[in-house]
Length: 240
Image: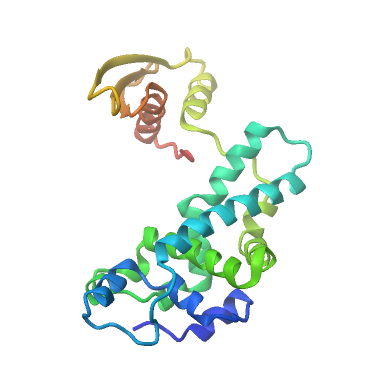
C-alpha cells in the first residue's frame, strides 16, 4: 500500500498549494485505467492532470534546468561534451537514482496487478514518476520550485566533475586504439522495411574479435547498436 503523500512533499522540500498535482504525479496509468472503468476509483484522486502529461512536462523542465546548470558549471566546455553530460544526467538511470533517494516507490499509486508485479521497484516506472513529480513541482511552484529540487537531487552527479560519457562508437574506437589495433570498420549488411520505416543492419569488425551485427532505423543508429553489442561482449559498459 502506498505511503501518505505528506512524506513525499517533505522530501521534495515543497508545500503544495494544489496537493492533487502531487497525487496525479504518482498515480500510474494502470490505476487511472481502473478509475475510468469505475473499478475501484478513489474519490480523493478525482479528475486531474494525467500522469503521462506531467511526465512529458517534467522531462522538458528537467532538460532545461540541467542544460542551464551545465552551462554555469562548465563555462569552457564545448557543446558536444555538454550534450554528452546532459544525456547522461537526464537518462532513466539518473532519474531512477533520484527516485530511490526519495523512496518514491513507497508513494506510487498502482493498480493491484501492477503493484503485485513489482511496480514499486520497476526502474522505468520510477524514472517516469520522477519526471511527473518534477512536472507537478513546476505547475505548483513555478520554475524555481522545480529548479531547487533538481539542483538538490542531481548535485552529486553534477559536482563529481567526471569526463563526459563516451558514446559506443567512440568507446569502441578508443578500446581498439588502446590495444594498438586498427580502427573499427562498419559495413552495411542490408536495409529492409518500407521507405518511411526502414531497418538497417550493420556489421562492425575489430581486429582480434568476432564481428557483431546491429540494427536500427538509420545507418548511424545501427552502427551505434553494433558497437554497443561488441563492447558488451568485451565487458565494456558505455552510456549509449
